[in-house]
Image 1 (cartoon, rainbow, N blue to C red):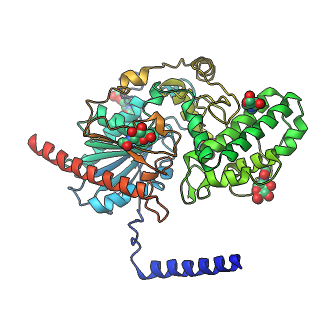
Image 2 (cartoon, protein in one colour):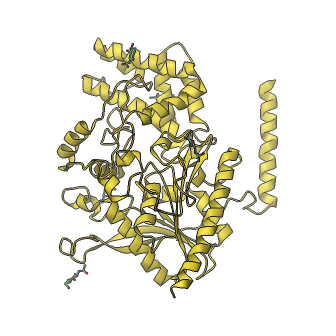
Image 3 (tube, rainbow, N blue to C red):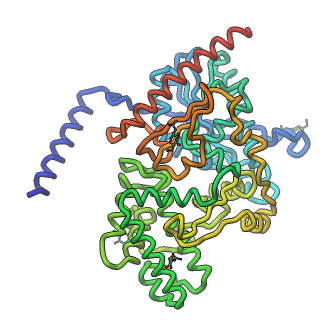
Length: 489
Ligand SMILES: *[C@@H]1O[C@H](CO)[C@@H](O)[C@H](O)[C@H]1NC(C)=O
Ligand SMILES: *[C@@H]1O[C@H](CO)[C@@H](O)[C@H](O)[C@H]1NC(C)=O
Ligand SMILES: *[C@@H]1O[C@H](CO)[C@@H](O)[C@H](O)[C@H]1NC(C)=O
Ligand SMILES: *[C@@H]1O[C@H](CO)[C@@H](O)[C@H](O)[C@H]1NC(C)=O
Ligand SMILES: *[C@@H]1O[C@H](CO)[C@@H](O)[C@H](O)[C@H]1NC(C)=O
């Protein structure tokens, strides 16, 4: 009976949605349907050394739409691409195009060098020394040069530029504003862990905050996760590898402590992703996620009496979203790297691993005390050994703090630091406003850069209000920049 009612209501609501889509403008809810054109920019290979690559260039991809732009006048909204295919960010940052429609802006999403199709040396980009041109500084210079030249080409030299970014992309937008205030009038840095990645954090913070998300759904949930990892530990101590293979539907039986370590990493990574992507509706960003994945995970963890099977099925929410996985392949579903929160897969994972081995510090551990995961250390020393072996580099802890100011940001201006309280990255970023023009926004019930996503009926009020504040501040910055530009004509 309940089910019948439910399907009836469901059908009516579907009907209603159809009617409203057919009768009204497609933008009825403020969402837009951006039509990006994919282009390539001839970019300088090495901005900082005139001999190493001479005048060598590579093709850097960017996406552009002028469909909302007041030509030659409206601002430029520039997304500082981060560690992946730029389409993934463009298709998951609807707020930027919604705001462009309101403020009549030109929108550009630029792909970060060494990611997606912006490979300076094609498939050889990840050899040494070719990989050495992958630095934060080179990426920022790419964006500065690209903005300057595209402004010329598009007749936009007087148009104020606002940069946007989420996560590492948010770090890049902060850096753009502080390194190139001549080019960039303001930055919206969503979920940007600029402090923790500069070594100004607590190595326990990340997995503690992942755990807190599950704990807040139900304390029994974290207990079940701890219990399952405890059982896995006992089985591996007894070297009962066939039992482990059966319980976790592994393609091959594990046969060493290294395999168990890999399994623990793979399982922990599923929880990491669900916490980061804990959006109130289903998404297709960094994989497919159901709505409220943390709740779904807890429901799965508490489903039956066999905790190991529950844990496998919980990991399946991430790795078996399509429902077509026949078994878990330990070494292809997850790669261990210099970022214990995950590097992703494919070429992009190599690029991120290199960045985590050089400038970006991600020394996070789990310990089964401040978090629900098995103890897995990742110290500066482990990082150093791994990175010298993998990439022939020695990481330089503290460099980002010197180069990009660490927490001593008070002389900067026009930056929004937004963070959602569900996001395990949030406490690695700026949580309190540092001045009247360095504004921190808290998004209660928000996961990883939820504010950059397009509006959705399931949005919490906090994100609706954060986006409104962001829109107002950005409009002010654009106005300020017009005044500044006029003064110096
Ligand atoms: C770089 O400059 C050299 C010397 O002027 C020239 O021969 C070469 O064609 C240039 N290469 C590129 C890629 O433009
Ligand atoms: C480069 O590698 C990708 C992914 O492995 C592959 O699809 C592509 O064909 C390769 N391109 C060349 C030119 O070898
Ligand atoms: C993946 O999901 C399908 C559908 O729910 C299920 O039948 C299958 O057993 C799952 N695969 C694994 C390896 O758990
Ligand atoms: C976590 O700690 C508890 C309590 O000390 C212990 O019984 C359990 O085996 C530990 N779990 C793991 C996976 O190490
Ligand atoms: C945001 O939340 C954090 C953590 O609860 C708190 O420390 C901070 O003061 C809050 N910041 C603002 C701007 O409300």
